[in-house]
Image 1 (cartoon, rainbow, N blue to C red):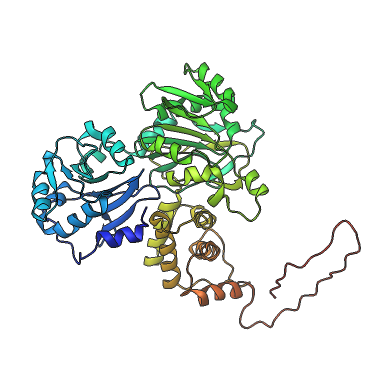
Image 2 (cartoon, rainbow, N blue to C red):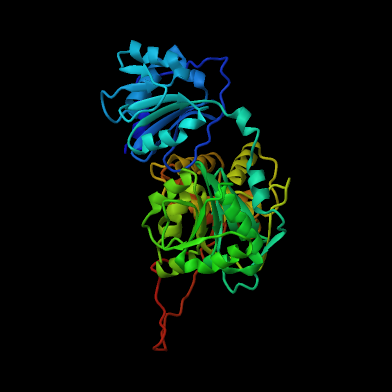
Amino acid sequence: MATPSAAFEALMNGVTSWDVPEDAVPCELLLIGEASFPVMVNDMGQVLIAASSYGRGRLVVMSHEDYLVEAQLTPFLLNAVGWLCSSPGAPIGVHPSLAPLAKILEGSGMDAKVEPEVKDSLGVYCIDAYNETMTEKLVKFMKRGGGLLIGGQAWDWANQDDLSEDREELLHGISELDISNSDCFPSQLLVHGALAFPLGLDSYHGCVIAAARYGRGRVVVTGHKVLFTVGKLGPFLLNAVRWLDGGRRGKIVVQTELRTLSGLLAVGGIDTSIEPNLTSDASVYCFEPVSEVGVKELQEFVAEGGGLFVGAQAWWWAFKNPGVSPLARFPGNLLLNPFGISITSQSLNPGPFRTPKAGIRTYHFRSTLAEFQVIMGRKRGNVEKGWLAKLGPDGAAFLQIPAEEIPAYMSVHRLLRKLLSRYRLPVATRENPVINDCCRGAMLSLATGLAHSGSDLSLLVPEIEDMYSSTYLRPSESPITVEVNCTNPGTRYCWMSTGSLTA
C-alpha cells in the first residue's frame, strides 16, 4: 500500500487550485484511525477532502456530494479515480444519484457507466453518502481491493447524536467506579482519539476506563483485566456490554480466561458464550490482548460494527521489556492505538474513581492540547485546574506512538514543533521555578517528550539545548564541582557510572 505522502502526490498531480461550488455547504471531515489523511484543508484547518485505505482497497471522501459532479474539479476527480482503481482498465461504476459524474469521466476517456449496485467487476464505485442499504456490499467491495469515491455532508445528521449520549448510556445509574477492594493496580489510559472519551477518573485526571466509537463499532477499555471480576462494577459491566452490542441482542463472546465475567453478566440477564477466540458470529467480544496475532482482524471487527470489551495493564509488560515503549510495542496498544485509547505503563492506585457529569467538561489530551495552543497564541486565557499538569506527561506518552507516515500522529508532532519554534522555552531558575500546572511547565514537558520521540528537531536544537542547560544553571552562576565517592566496599552491590555527568 502506498504511503500517505505518495498517495497525496498522486491525488494532487496537476491540481494547482480548488474551485469548489459556492452554493454547496460542506461539512468538516473527522479523520479517524491510522490510515486516513487530509487532501483538501480550508483556511480554518477543516478537512474537506480526505483519503484512506481499508482491507486491500482505497477510498476518497468529499465533504459534499456536489463536489463529485462539479466539472471544474475534473482534474482532481480523474486523479482520484485513477488512484482508487487497483486494476488498470477496470470499469468505473457510478450510482444514479451522481449521473453527471459518469459523463465527466466518459468525456475524459474513462470507461464509466451508471450502475445502481456495486459489482465485483468494477474497479471503482462512486456514490453519495446517503444510501444505507449498500453499506455491507461497499465494505466487502473495498476489502477485496475495490476503490470507493464517496461524497456527502452530515451536519444535519450529526445534530441528532453526540458522544454525551453514549457516556450517559454507559454510566446510567452509576455515580462512581469503585475498585478499592480489587487488590489490583490498573494502568492509566491515555485517551487521545476524537471519538474516544473517559469514563472513570482519579483526582489527578488519571483515566482507568474509557470508551470510543470506531467506524460502525464501539470499544470499551479498562486498565486491568481484574476489573472484569469486581462485583461492585457489575452495573457498569452490564451497561458496557449492552452499549457495545448496540441493541442487536447478538452473541456475547467471553474469552476463556475471563469466565468470571460471564457469571457477573449472567446475574444481569446477559447470556454469554465462553470461547478461546473471537467467533465469526459475535456481536461483542470480551478479552485481554496478550499477543500481536489477530490485531487486524479485531480492528476490522470493530470497524464493521462489532463491540470490543478490553481489559489489560501494561506496567508488567514494561517491566519485562525495559527500554521498549509500551505505547509502541505492547500488544494491547497495537490493537487500541487506532481507536484513540492507549494503555500506559503508569499505574493508578485502586480506589473509587469519579465518573464524568453531564454538562461538565472532562480532560481529554487532544482537546486540551488545542486549548493550550490557543492560549499560547493569545498570551491569555486558562484551562481547568490540573489539566496542564496532565498535558505534559500525556504529551510525552503520546509522542511514543510510532508516527511515521501516520498523519493523525504526525500532525501532533508538527503542532508541537510549531509551538516550540514560535515561543521560547521558559528558563527555570531557583528564583523563577517552573511549576507543572501552568503553560511554562507544560511547554517544558512537551519539549522533553518531543526530544525523546525522535521527531525532527533540527531547527530547534538551540532551544532544546537552552532548555536543558538553563534548567540547572543560570548564566550568572559559576560551575558547580561535584565529588562522587566511587568506592565499593561491599561485594553485593557496586556503584557504576551512567557514562554522563552534568554539573
